Image 1 (cartoon, rainbow, N blue to C red):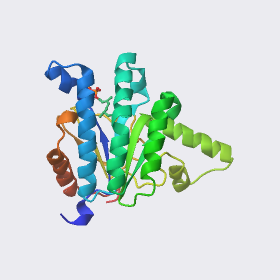
Image 2 (tube, rainbow, N blue to C red):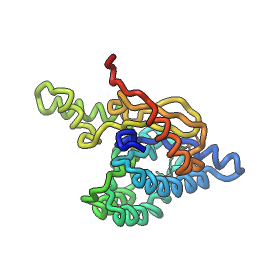
Image 3 (spheres, protein in one colour):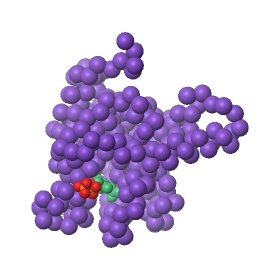
Length: 228
Ligand code: FPP
């Protein structure tokens, strides 16, 4: 495919783990484990397709009000898989970064995250961003407060650079799996001109082939950024 037709930055709302498990009469935790495994496989495939940057919405600020049991399960998965995943990414020369409010996460999970970020620092092939305890509105509010503290009016570019992904290009393609048709407080500012792709496929079933289908659909979109 023509390189200009490959999105530079793909963002994915990974939804449907719970329903995937329910369909199989399994606990929600089994859905999250399957989602975690798929997330690792998919993040390798994305960079093999020539994408430079990928942001995965793992846990929103609002998701943090789910039951203690479900959250403990998700944090346990992070402890179990994060170091191994960081190693895979390091071997592939990909930088791993986490965005979101770390004060909302258990201290040892933050340590695991920071070790993974350090391990992959400087990877030049691409950047994988995991959004954990992240909210788009919270991100914008925090940038507003930075601007207020700076004590002067800011330009659009200056403001963009104050957001969590300030040094990365905006997502070209925003995918949501699991049938719902909404953005759910993901990269609100950055997704202003993202091409949207919704699929009924539940995240653990979102195969490499499904991702290729989304990239193919993107390649046929005409992007005008509001111009005639
Ligand atoms: C949404 O599915 C998914 C999540 C809230 C978590 C996504 C997590 C992963 C892909 C696993 C790896 C990430 C972490 C943080 C361990 P849902 O549970 O809302 O599914 P449902 O809408 O079918 O109930």
